[in-house]
Image 1 (tube, rainbow, N blue to C red):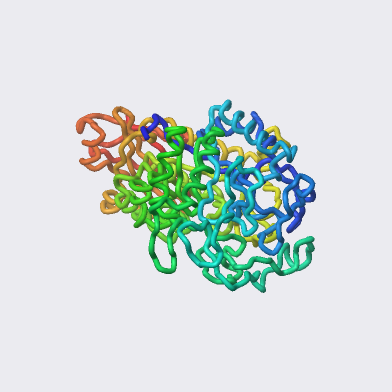
Image 2 (cartoon, rainbow, N blue to C red):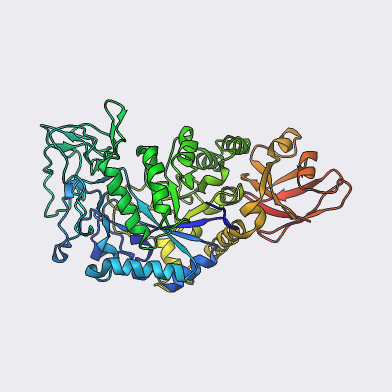
Length: 570
């Protein structure tokens, strides 16, 4: 796929939480008590504001129908079993119908798919693209598609349940055994009741649990609410059976094609490396026949598999979690040195453009939470690095731009610095920006408005500045550390394209400090600067700093705590 002139900038929203205006926040509260956001809440004002923030793609998280503990039986949707649902709103990754959307998100449940299609139309009209989840590794224990197209057989419908593994089966089985709910699990907590809550779930033979657990008695830390899909891999014998093409491959291809034909612009593929790379290499080119520009993002955590999933799996982008995210988190917390950043870029040489950078998503603790930075401003330099270090896309999570700390225990999820994905909830700082659906930020504090302005500035620069979106990268941190110009809490690198030459400086210092920065001779040459010339650098981010280079291309800079600069060299 050809690289566009700009950088992809993704806004991940937990769709059911994004538009919720209620602030009751009762643990395990019902949909009616705590409220739920709808497709229709994501209005033109919201999308316009995201576009102005510098966003290019919106990842609508949790759109596909998943198991929930709200009664939709009047609409022909079976009641889910509480003992295999986490929280009251359910995990968006326990899909119960790949061909349908979450009824929670609709104003009119019978018209839920049409409401989603109208959201896609609004998104495109606002000049944005839409990404949804594709959850290929596992489904809800009560998976059943009532929205599948005519002639489509349901997952597991023709399985031979007398064997643990068959290449033609969609699931793995434990013949002669019945599934047992983990004894420690109390659906909705010990104090709440639900018609299907009795500590049991009838499943004979038991199916293998989503995180590859071949036991009829998974524990409470397993993905016990899900069942593993079979892609022709005999996990116990460690053998693959890909010829003829397994039935699961064909069914999953049809699902991707279905949504691509609905004008979805991309898929964030959950736990992509738990699905064989051969499947991805087979399916992605077929989906691209419908839309050559469709984007595939892999949630992946094994750096040894990165090149495999790009080259053979045909993914556009991969999570850069275990390298850049983890390293920046440690630097913010004072547990690592900035010298650890450049080796990551070296290790990813040749695939830097394919790495998706972020500091927050639904799985990670909020930047502003006491578990991470404790203060959103302490995370600013890390955000600048994430957004500017290479041509790869950058992502933020809804509320990050206003310092949402993810506080409170919503029910299934404890008070752990994450915004719940399992329960109905209001997200307080985000709700201030939403301002009852006006999406104008009038309820934000002055400091929050400044923080959101920073995010808008850095994301817009990252997305549109030619040096950041298309340019080369050159580290000068090591040179300056060796020269004693600054300490291990400061990072400096160059991004450049033709006459556009940028110097990005970030400091993770807790107190004011005076530093020096020098462009080494190799950098002067790479930038095409005249060794005898006179140059200045002006900060594009805060527009407060301007410095002049000495004859040896050095300047001094007084840095406030946790500061960041994007200097344009002229």
